[in-house]
Length: 471
Ligand SMILES: NC(=O)C1=CN([C@@H]2O[C@H](COP(=O)(O)OP(=O)(O)OC[C@H]3O[C@@H](n4cnc5c(N)ncnc54)[C@H](OP(=O)(O)O)[C@@H]3O)[C@@H](O)[C@H]2O)C=CC1
Ligand SMILES: [Fe+3]
Image 1: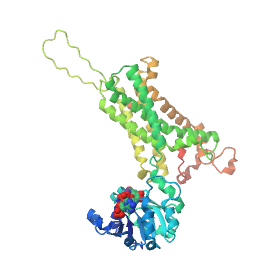
Image 2 (image 1 turned 60 degrees about the vertical axis):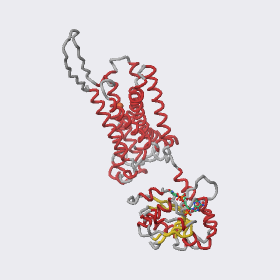
Image 3 (image 1 turned 180 degrees about the horizontal axis):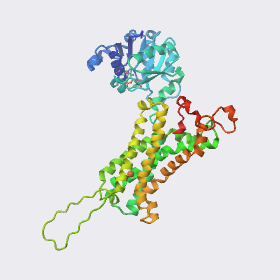
Image 4 (image 1 turned 180 degrees about the vertical axis):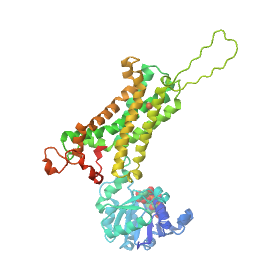
């Protein structure tokens, strides 16, 4: 890069973090402060030993690139008095407004008031903490917006030098969106969290009613014993909600006879929530696993153990020792096994959903993990719950089974699984494949050039893009 010297106005958290990285990469950094004599920056950290602190006006003379590490509300009052010395500089606005403001952004105000400067907006999506601590991470991304491509390139070169990746986002009129980026605190999690909360609430109410009002379990069994059932039910419900929309999307495509029509809005939003729902299912399943481990014993899980009983003769006079071992019976063993595998597969989904892992999966592996492994996980989860219910379904009144949480919680997941199995049957699977290869009902087959048996397209499948709704 041509710029090996940088000026940063302000001596706060952001300025020091950026300086640390710049100095580490061989840059000469000059900070501009309102009170340079009182800011002994090099004494604050050994990493900042080469940094000089000058008055704001003196500092800006040291480089053509000036980062504005000062509060957004004081940018104008700081820069207007030194306007003359800023001529020809690249001003980098890193600010995030403290409060949402309407009208022009700081960057837009700068463009208006400093026509002889180039304004670049960016870096605001980073945190000072990650900037300072993430020396070894090369993958942090900065977003840049500017009306000048030369100015953008100068700032981008500095960013790349200190190990950041740049995304160039367009002109300064896009800065509002850039300022909104860090504000999207929920980042797609809002609705999935609400849905998960609703699922949990529903099962909490039902579980509490069932065991503590209907069945009169002692209240002290609520935190572990009852919550364990609630967590299990929530987990499998959320898992079903994660895989159901994919099948519904397939049915919509079959009905439309085309993949080129938009899905209904709510289905589209549901499809986009699958990752979050899957992760909430994983969280619930992990809790279910921990709680189960905490109290797995014949005292709580009678039906899973061969309970040994001992009889002591009434006229016993001397001491006797009775070895008692209660082993799990096959129902217990099978149920725990199926549940453990389900959790394991769910964990592999969770790992695959980490952005750093997802980015490295080609579409086919991603599809294998999310769809194939995912549905196998669902199958294990469903059989895990079924193993708790089925062995006893004939030995007690059907109405008792139906009221059980295991039975109820398994209805939606079983339906989801069944739907997926139906879609694999040739009568539905082959048309679906054709549709996903681009075939449309009502268009001349020869004109479409799509091979009708639905499998002949296999050879160019590796080049195809991943189809969201297939998962
Ligand atoms: N902290 C972070 O994680 C991030 C911050 N930002 C942005 O960077 C900018 C600076 O943030 P940050 O470093 O956290 O803030 P700080 O409050 O830690 O530092 C701001 C610095 O600006 C200087 N300053 C100049 N004029 C004023 C004024 N009127 N009132 C107060 N300070 C003034 C001060 O330095 P002196 O006293 O030496 O003049 C002060 O140290 C903000 O616009 C923020 O939105 C962007 C991304 C991340
Ligand atoms: Fe379970």
